[in-house]
Figure: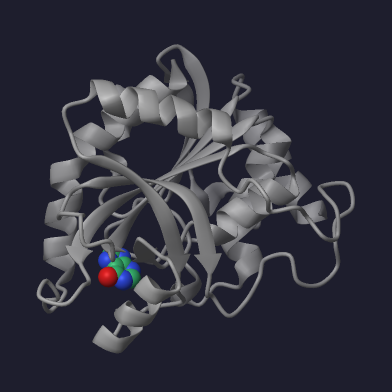
Length: 267
Ligand code: HPA
């Protein structure tokens, strides 16, 4: 708790801006930043107790500014469990953003498509999730000042934000689905049998992030909105060897539409 406060105090000392929306950008999905009127930029390395991003395709910095005139804190680069961070480290920035004042959290990620109606570079708004990661960020001492010991998960993704996304999706000429995201630990991708299992248990997409951040945000009663970019297809007949450059290419194709969706969600 002390570390969360120190990190938030450091950021507050370096910016005038009080963000209302926190945004976490996933792999290859940094393009939203071009629309951002940046007021303050802080490298993660400078923020006390912040973990440091290790993935090449991520820039590690916190941006404070305005998008569509709305005050936002944007995490350019996130922390993954597979990088070796503890779940508390992975979710530390979400708790810091809460202390900065955020009232909602938007998250994006790259994910494999399990639903056979999906195509590469489609978007999927996450309407529920299945947590298959082996650790939970809320294990251990509960910070009662942040939230309850046994937080409710009946509405992991905010129904008003989901309804708004549906309306926006209808106006956009782009495939935007809604579905269930399964979070796995990674870093390896799944075997064909694992993809089949994930489909059977009801997942539409699979990835290695997002769920820890959403759990911690819901613990603090922050409404959440999350979108997956479908970067590869994971059902029989479509499964191919997954290459990181193909994932990044699919992310790049979908990215302008993800940006359009998020910008409209802020209006
Ligand atoms: N599995 C897990 N994570 C992923 C995938 C996948 O197929 N694609 C992008 N992230």
